[in-house]
Length: 113
Image (cartoon, rainbow, N blue to C red):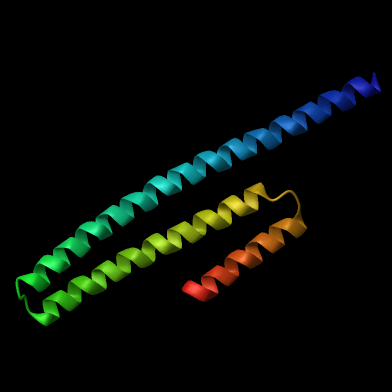
């Protein structure tokens, strides 16, 4: 009887782990779609800035649009990093691995942000 409870408990724990992983994968896919949308918008802004430069628009106007593009790219970058943090924390098998993964992502942030 005790062994059947242990097996049932083990199956329940395994199912919970699978459910958590499925949720993490779904969340990551949602973040990827959102980031791709942000990058497409930034791409359109860059095309607009290029047209402004080619048509000889005022430097201040071009600079303002370039700042907007830079801001859009920064938002996409930080959303990507937030997604990575969420995913790594959810996927880590234990606290040690989670700490190592978060530390690696912090190095990326320090290097590129």
